[in-house]
Amino acid sequence: MALVEMVMPKMGESIMEGTVLKWLKQVGDTIEQDESVLEVATDKVDTEVPAIQGGILKEILVQEGQVVAVGAPIAIISTGGEEEPSSSAPEQEAAPVAQPVAQEVAQPIEAPQANAHTFQRLEQPASGRFYSPLVLNIAREEGISMQELEYIPGTGKEGRVSKKDILEYVAARQNGSSAAPAAQPVAQPVAAPAPQPTPAAQPQVAPAASTPAVAPAQSYSGNVEIIEMDRMRKMISQRMVDSKRISPHVTSFVEADVTNLVNWRTKMKDAYKKREGENLTFTPIFIEAIVKAIKDFPMINVSVDGDRIIKKRDINIGVAVALPSGNLIVPVIHNADQMNLNGLTKKVNDLANRARLNKLTAADLADPTYTISNVGSFGNVMGTPIIMQPQVAIMAVGAIKKKPAVIETPEGDLIGIRQFMFLSHSYDHRVVDGSLGGMFVRRVSDYLEGFDPNTNI
Image 1 (cartoon, rainbow, N blue to C red):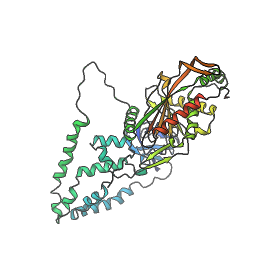
Image 2 (image 1 turned 30 degrees about the vertical axis):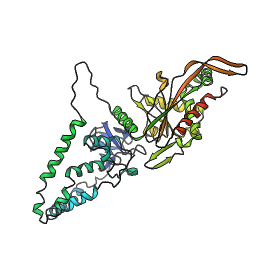
Image 3 (image 1 turned 135 degrees about the horizontal axis):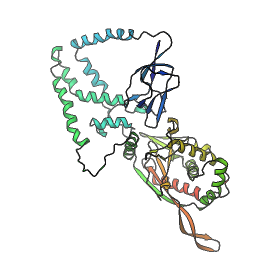
Image 4 (image 1 turned 180 degrees about the horizontal axis):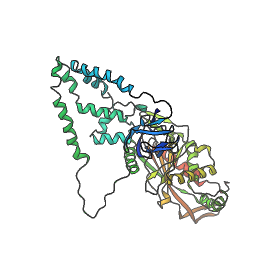
């Protein structure tokens, strides 16, 4: 029998790791090719991972709840054919392992010198760098401040700090930066163990001192209910905190007269439902107006990478969807500028339905460039939304309300009943000033107010 390694698959361009939620198969079970073997959670979506090859699940390498990097082995599958000699690898590794052990006695200086070089802090802080929720959780548990985190060298994409980077830094910090200089002047290898008790005591003191600050003791009366956050709520919480820390938020508001739009939808929704079997909502109309405004103001469709502004050619609109669990997810309409109103309507309905059924894929959540949140669906007239990093802007659309308004006519001004709604535009003041942020939301309002009542769909 041949042994095949099953690895953590890549489930999106920006996804570097995943958490094993549940094994659907156990050791000894027969697996068909493309049959689901386990459930994996990423920072974007929960999904099932299929088998790359049929056979028997011989070994599970990763336990439930463990975080695994993309490309790392997670299981061993035994397939048909001659078994590859698996015992030869450990025998070959045994010889070289023994050599460094002997060398450590004669040359105790090499390991500390290598660590001192490998974990050298950056000369300048990497301000504005993105950190994954996993890295931030490790930093919080280890008492690493944000200022200290910015000096850690990163080996991930665009210089990001990976799980491996921060764990190596934690290990080096616990060994003590003074350990290497103390060992260098020692000439005799016997003296090398002497300074070891001192650094061994250091990591025990640091966590103990930081523990009260991280998790202060609290007492609760019997009149409370303690609810543990689920994985998605923890992730949303961390992302919102990160976004407020990274981006200085400014919000501009515009009130739009959408009477023509409301009258058109009222006239068309029943016929559309009968013809297409789907609901005609306001959301695709809002998206169409936002796409037009992005074309007029392309500097809204950007992201920030350190001191560089990344201007996006694709217009990918994220649509915030509330889930039955109370959590929030943001599926993406890719290349929204290439769709007509009918195409946007079908795409919005499809993503919303699959989101509520937990059927979204990682591709459905990848690479948004601008996000819309319909707070009006909850009866709210306006909101101050938080930017979805690494985007630089997000718009909230409020509930549509009837109001008395002054109507200008050739015969003079009249008081009439009109349909109004508020648009709330939050933007990153690092790269979007008040003029651009204000003009953008005003342009979206202009497109909505100027909606053609003769539009066909």
